[in-house]
Length: 125
Image (tube, rainbow, N blue to C red; front, side, top):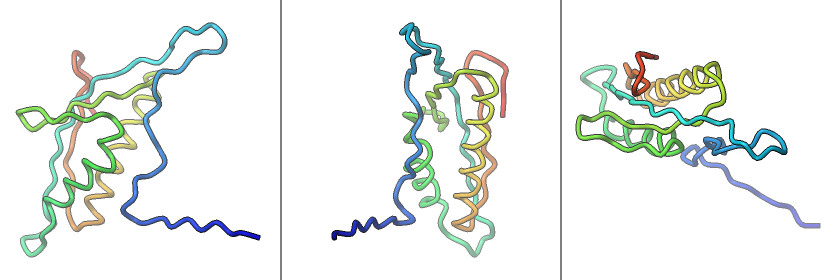
């Protein structure tokens, strides 16, 4: 009898991935839209005695932003491509992303004051 051992490190990416284009049943017509979101990532240390802002940003880029094909613009904002089926799903996805960013910063003794803007609209999170 063989046993399978899987090691999971705290530094591995989660299994959650942004879903690509989905089909709605047998019709073959795509119902998934892709939103272009602009993320202003503001990470600061909790106090002047704490270091780790750079590593926190690298962690967030690697673990949370990579799944949305994030591209850093010259003004420092990140352009994210987020697939969604409904506005409620997009709201949930963005709120979860902002929560994950805040949690990741908190784990490294930093805090986040990030915001997201949907390009071409006046929607903000």
